[in-house]
Image (cartoon, rainbow, N blue to C red; front, side, top):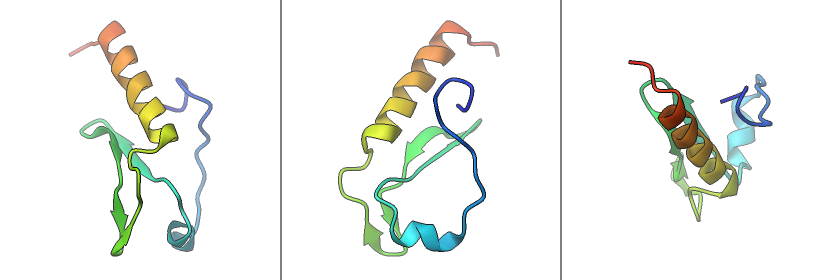
Length: 68
């Protein structure tokens, strides 16, 4: 995802999740998955605009360059 988007990887403290407006997970087994709840706090509108764009880019790139 990093090379396909303008995303940056960073080590952040867990406390940033308390104020996050949008969170998503990505990996080889999950593709891109929006997070809708953290520790009982809803993240309304998940997936948000950043996660939705990441999902779209992932699907497009995998369709164009799928290698089993």
